[in-house]
Length: 237
Image (cartoon, rainbow, N blue to C red; front, side, top):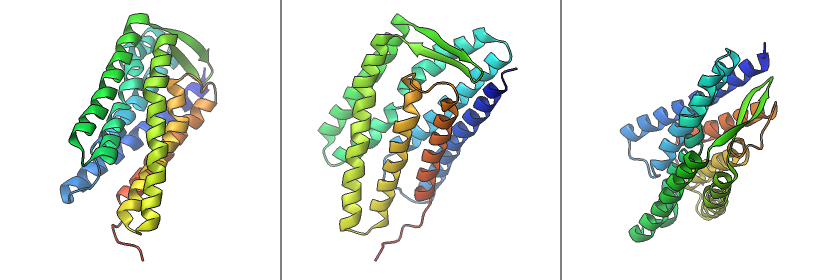
């Protein structure tokens, strides 16, 4: 019965655990020595880890025949967390862009904090629907207004931040061959992979077996961040 759903559950669990394990590794590194980048990255990894584990949990309930629990978890946790889990990224990019300009930093993160919580409020106000129930699991779709606010108010700005920071960190790395610059460039590559695959799940674009590719993609993004976060910080010649 729906063996594909169990594959989906397994991949979700592994993807979620990868994010949580990287979060704890980054916390351990911060205890050993001061890290130069924002904790927003750490808490993004934690929140997306929790998100994808819960996606796995709700699909397991669907597979086990408890569709009401599947819907309940999506409505009260997974749906809102789809939007909330990206918020720490704006704190990371606020640090990256405006580290020396406190007022601009507060304006930047404050704006996206308000937009994010407004999106969640609209989600609860206008609801959602079950858009897909297949061999691979269930798929829920938020209302069009929530999708529009999320797309133009959160997703596109986040994607722009990632692209812009990829370019500026690559330029900084090429000009000054420091591992710190290479690390931040690699972090952004990992985040770019996540933005291009995993967030499309939240936009209800990934369906059927492509869901598995999405969850594999977020494992790759977490592993890239882990590899460079734990690398040796030595200047390159």
